[in-house]
Image 1 (tube, rainbow, N blue to C red):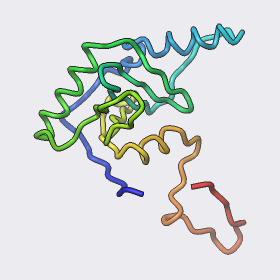
Image 2 (image 1 turned 45 degrees about the vertical axis):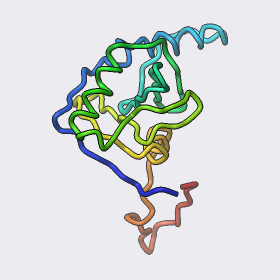
Image 3 (image 1 turned 120 degrees about the vertical axis):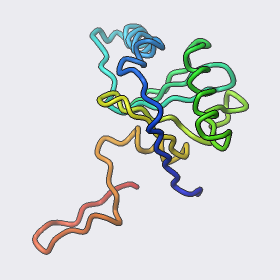
Length: 148
């Protein structure tokens, strides 16, 4: 397993509705309609983004959606590479290959981080993140199990 690398990008603020602008929420709602589920999809607070060759891929909860090519996400990927002096990238070289890093966006305060792909994906899929090394049960608390 690779190191758990998290890189703060204080210079990068993205709009709170980026998932909607990229048509992620529309794609989820359309897929749900095909399954006979009707309603409005509200994405999670934290959303992940990367480029699979030219196509943006958006992750939120257990939803992973590949979208049509987007100039906006390509520009964001270029900006990340410029900010990090080309040390970090959210681009994958092939559609079935994971990128080295995932852009994690907090839609509440517009902040962004780069997170090593595997750890970032686990964070985005977790309903209640647990950091076992920081949490120890007290004497009167039952031991908690996690599948981390």
